[in-house]
Amino acid sequence: MNLAWKLARRFRRGKQQSRFVSFISFSSTFGVGLGCFVLITLLSIMNGFEHELTQRILSVIPHGELYSVNQRGIADWQEHQRQFQQREDILKVEPYTKITGMLQHKGALKAVELTGMAYQEQSADAFSQEVDEQDWQRFLATPDGVLLGNGIMQKLSLDIGDNIQILIPTVTDDLSFKAPKTVKLTIAGRLIIGGELDNYLGIMHLSRASEVAGIQSGAQGLRFTLENPFGAYATMREIGFAFPQAVYMSDWTRTQGHLYQDIQLVRTVVYIALTLVIAVACFNIVSTLVMSVREKRAAIAILKTMGADDGLIRQTFVIQGVLNGVIGIVAGTGMALLIAPNLSAIVAWLESLTGITLLSGDVYFINFLPSQLHWQDVAFTVLIAFVLCVVATLYPAQRAVRVSPARALNG
Image (cartoon, rainbow, N blue to C red; front, top):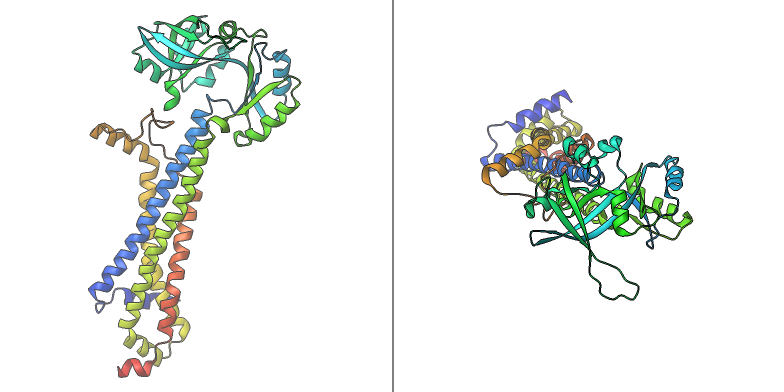
């Protein structure tokens, strides 16, 4: 192996190698490196989107919900809350009442979805990243207070302390039209989630929301935070079918599940497409070695006449081809390890420099480009690229073994 290594390095750096072969060799190395860099970087972006979905969005959006089919609400919800809290697969259960209406301020209207919840002092940790501490304390001290999404406040030019009106549609048994109910609230703070949720979400107190909505039991439904949010579909149906009261069942996969499915689809497409890019780059390794074998026919013949066996010749050209690939793998992976963890900061800097917003919160569920590097993705990419490089060298190496010393030297 030591002799094969020396021969491979000598052949790779040989002066008799044509410029065209050198160019093909460089392009194969560059292609493998570029493929590794882009694959690791894009996988890091997909990991970032998945992390933001589970940590940011699902910290506000419940993993699962049970809510009443009528205005009576959930009967004896305190006892049900206590029982559900004892399950190991459920982290938290909270009562809530949801109100959907139109926010009116100075002639402007905006659709909002307000969720009333029984927040206590110890509940501040639940929104430590989304709500400022002063805003949270102001909200707790204001019975008619509301926390509005930052997008709503910006679009309507609202500020903390402003009084707003919420127009709530009135439901009648005969489906006749009736004037909407008007509720006056005071803005106590901003809710900064990031993305489209900032444009319609709001939080108010449970008692006030239940009073406005006419919920007799004091809570329209129960919100669940699960140990495994990706098992929410099965868990909520198990709970809902066993619930003693007629309720509607819902989970986050119905409202936000398309985001997770899109992320997984893009991840799969990225894996396939960029693996093929690396494979195409490896085909250049095949071309490089085939041309190198033709140029080194005389040298191969001399080695064979001096006693070199087929294994040594095969190892020499395998190592020569793998060297091209390994250089590209190391360079591309090294660049990815530098760029991927800092990609969010780099993109934010470019946005501030150019004034162009890459991800708009009006369109996407977040308004920045996330990135999270996973070492298993790096290891998988390096392994796939290395295996493809090795496979690409087998055919040219076998052609080198078949070189006839007599024909090569006579030719």
